[in-house]
Amino acid sequence: MLKIAEFAYIISMFISVAGFAVHLTVRFKDLSATSSLAKQTSTTFFLLFILIFNISDYVIIYFGKSLGVEYVDWLYAFQNVMEVVLVYALICMETEYSESKLPRAVDFIMAAVIMALVYFDVVLDWKSTADENLYFSLMIVINAIPIVILAVCSVVYIRRCIEKGKNRRMLGYFALFIFAAIVLCVISTATNADLQTVHHFIGNSRAIFEFIWFVFNIMTFVFVWRTITTSPNEAVVVGITEEEMFELLKGEYGLSDREAEIARLLYAGKNNKIIAEELFLSPNTVKVHASNLYHKLGVTNRVEAVQLMSERKNGH
Image 1: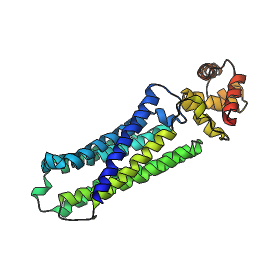
Image 2: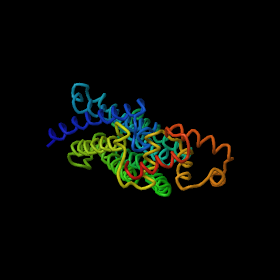
Image 3: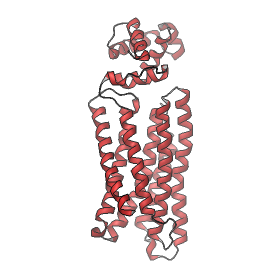
Image 4: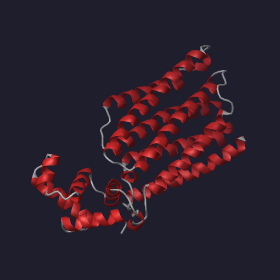
């Protein structure tokens, strides 16, 4: 069973590399995309941290015996920190996608959690003490903090995404990532406790951990693949809603949030004066944004812009 899990894990790592490569190609080659998620900076870091975690786990699985116990312990400590970083990257990805601002308190709390993990796992040698129960209790508390923050932030930001009419399929991926991240943190904490103490909380915890990462990597690759397309024609979806159509245009043509708002109001048949009133902007500012919008869409006026949006919505 363990060998099968290891084989599945190595396959999943290659899948993770492929997904990250596809994402980088789309972002830096400025290819068309079906969602703004495909080109977010936070998405790049989220996928990068997943890849780094995979590499460190690969080293532990296949080179752990040759490295020795001391170096393996260092790698496990590094992974413990990476879990928090991965959770933080996921929160940042939700924040950027919902067009919100992350509270500074979250930054400070996450930094404090990372420093606490480094201290308890690296600086303080728990193997030289007899108080293993205290160690495990502290690990539970410290690792629970990022999970709680992730859960609270996810509820807030996903609700904002729903209010703004964001793509429901992308929100579904967020929900899966949140669930997977929480399970990974729980399993990893238990695995680390098994290694550092005499307790054995989860039987075959290593195999379970590798299987969960296998599923997580598959899910990540599917997520990347579904948020991009290699040509504008492939981004067209028949029968999409208006919200999905604006999300598609935003990703395909690289529209800013303000340009997407103006495109939405233009599509609703509103003139520059009404748009200026609704967005609390001057008419001249609206004209500038509208001009930038036309340029990005490759049209010359609002009639052509609305026609293009209608064609995208109807799948032409």
